[in-house]
Image (cartoon, rainbow, N blue to C red; front, side):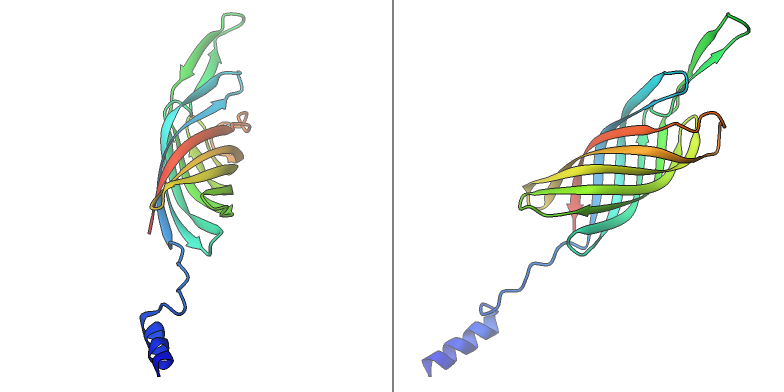
Length: 182
């Protein structure tokens, strides 16, 4: 009789079969970073910025959602003007604005989570274009509720809407971000 009472108590309190911890359903990420580009004249432009994303977790390994980023002076361009050999160099300073979506595919190795990133979106500086991005990130969990991630991405141009000759405007971004999971 004691065994029956103990079995009923175990089943009723849930101690018999522990429920698997469900992964969070979504995340809000806020990041600081640096982006830079090289224009046709060989000028390198870059600056600090912020990135914001809202991702939906689809299973344990895949996340997808929108993101937006703004980087100071990373969308600038160097213009060479002037007749003959009298060239003048003018820098047109513009922030780089990025709007698009990102997908993350990663594995959980305990407290560390490496992942690859894929994205598509619109880049706007002195040149406006559609593009894609590829990159990698490494997530750490100093606390269980607030992960910290380091990432690097290469943003490539698919179609240029502004200047025909500047089809090769690409950006490199590095960042650190914090994530709120729920």
